[in-house]
Image 1 (spheres, helix red, strand yellow):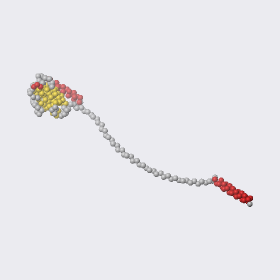
Image 2: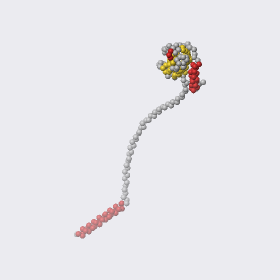
Image 3: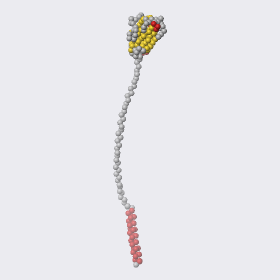
Image 4: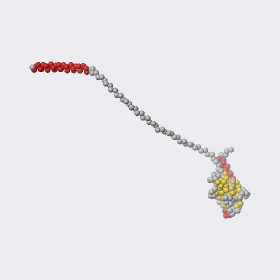
Length: 219
């Protein structure tokens, strides 16, 4: 059955709560594993409960492997008359978290890994404190949520525009001029022209007769 992310988150909270309050009621017996005395000899721990005895003369070194984004919870339950401080160092051995509660109070660290690798836990006896302390380690991954992402892909469309070809057609227009010669008939003018000739002839004849009479009279 698939558990929803919200349900997983609630289950994680319940487990973490029980994990935090459990040291108040129970301190396990001394573990069989021995703490390291330096980074090179740091004892690797897994999720679980451990118990170690602190002599007060040297620090205890442990290491845990964390994947990126994994969450680590550490609880150290100290004796009422002791004061142990806890430091968490990155794979580069830089302090990323610390817990320095007063004498007799438990130490707590919660950290989410920013990178994958071995993280170091160093328990330091303050003022040479001694005693048996209990350590609880919890490592878990945060709940995953399914996120649906809709991506719209934009595809550019390229349109090739061809340069239009302009065809210029030259039309030569030949104009033929036709000269129309009209025949003019002087039909109406013909009688007048004939009469004019008759009058002109008559005047010439009359004039000739007058000239002849004048010549005779002078003789």
